[in-house]
Every structure is written in structure tokens, then in C-alpha cells.
Image (cartoon, rainbow, N blue to C red; front, side, top):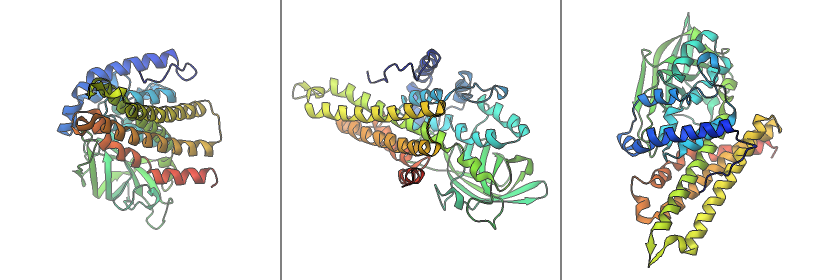
Length: 389
């Protein structure tokens, strides 16, 4: 009932076909199992291969590596359909390569690309991005993990934390400081580090939400990494790392309003069947207003993301302003998710407090969406600077 209306100026018949196929996959392979996987704190590794067989993992990657070229609206569809599971953890792990591989695509050597990318998008290997450190989150320029050149290797020492797929990852895209004498963005490089590198230890982290997604604290103790695993130019990795943040934030925006819509749909279904004093909740004006307030926020966020995607895809708009609007889209979408999760739990009452409802899970997972990819405060400040405030 609350699906986005048909919008042919955004979505082609091929987009619609992909959505239908993906929706069927999510409904058959993920949704029936998601509660059990969440409680178990993991999901079968075989799901990566199943997703790869459908073309999900290779979406937007070059054909020569086994990928399928695709425009930005395919990514939006991917986010919207994965949101139907009501689980942020499953998409975070399945799609961890979407933040791990872009630096390699943008700046890596052809040898390194061919060694890593095909196996990841085939679902045979798992890739993770390791940037965040215990000493700082969004302030990437202050990272402390060092990689000191020693002949044909770099010796890596330091820590990374909150790393999605950090326990399972076969390949880690790691931000390091190759010139400790240089502070700030200078002196930062990117290394691809194998998950079985001696000296690398991993500790699993327990979280408020995203239970089925493994999240790790990584410790590098004088790990020797081949110099050929350097991505791009030494000491110039900061821009390489920043390159994908806008795409990540737009994807997170679509995911967030997708979760908001799930809460809306679950609340509506409950309000229509639940009776109080002989009448369905949906007949109460206060409940109808709550539902409309939820729908308003979902529609506003979705409309902004669709417009942004169209502008990016067709090269319209000032780059600085587009970045600012992407930041605002993430804020708007995650606030919609927060509002709708809260209202849905309120409408469901006692059932909303029970594990097993999608709204309960989404309620727990709101905060990671408001923090991950750049916190709300960082997004607002960056947007203000981009438009000259």
C-alpha cells in the first residue's frame, strides 16, 4: 500500500524487473530466517554465493571482474528491498564489499584488482573496510595505525574498531599512516591486507543492534604486508578513502527510509486488526494522524533521494551543493527512521516491545544508522560548509 508510486522517469522496465527478482530473493532466502539469524548472531556464509548468483554482489562493478554495470537507481532498489527484512545487520555484512572495494577500484593496480575483486563479487571471499580507530571516528585524518616501509613490505601496527565483517573478512581495505611525521590528511595510505596475515588478531564486538552482522576490533601487531598491496600512491590515500563516502551516504539514506516504511506498514497492519473498546485502532483519529505523520516523513525522504540520484546520474547540479544535499538526505532519512520506529513501537504497544517484530529490531538499530557513514552532527556541519554557511 505504501510502496513508491510508479515513476518511469526514474525507473525503467529493467529496474522494475530487477526489483521483482530481488524482492523474491529477499522473501524466500532471507526474511523467513532473519529472526533466527539475529538471535544466533550470524548467518550462513553460503548466502554470499546465493546473492552473487543473482548478480547482487557485482552490481555496478566492471564486467571484466565479473560485475554488472548498473546506474545508481539499481543501488537504491537494492537498499529499499533489503530494508524489507527489517534487519540492518544482514545488509551490512552482505554488502560490506560496497565500502571495501571502491578504493581498490579507484586506485588499485590491475594485478591487485584481478586478484581480489572477482572472488569477492562471486561470493567466494568477503571484503571489509577498516578505517575507524578507538581514538577517533569520523575524523579520518587523525588515524594512528602506522605502516612503515621495510624493504618489499610494510610493517603495520595499530588498531581498528567497529569493523563490519571484521571477523569474517578475507580481505581488509585498511587506512594507514605511512608517514608518521606528517599530521592530518597527509601521510595516509591505503593497504589491502589478507585476513590470515600473521600478527592480525580480531575480537568480536557485541552491539545494540545488527546482531547477525559480525563486527570486530582489529589489532595489527607488526603485520608484514607486501608493498604491492598498496592501493594508489603512498601518502595520498586520504582522497581515495573519501571518494566513496557520498555513494555510501546516499545508499544509507535509501536504506533508512526503507526501514521507516517497514515500520509504517507493520504499524498500519496492527492498527487495522487490533481492537480497543470494540473498534480497530485505525479508526482512532490519533492513530490515523500518527500513521500520516510517518508516511509524510517517508515520502519526503524518498523524494529527496530520488531527486538526488537523478541529478547525479544525469550530471545536473553543482557538485558542492549535491554533496550538501546528500548529507541532508542522510539526516532526513535517518530522522524519518527514528520517528517511524518510535511511533510503530508505540502503536504496537506491548507487542512492539517484544523481540520478533520488525519495528522492535529497527528501533534498536536506529542509532547505528544515525552514526554510521558520518554522524548527524558531522553531516549538518559538512552540508553547511559546502553551501557556504
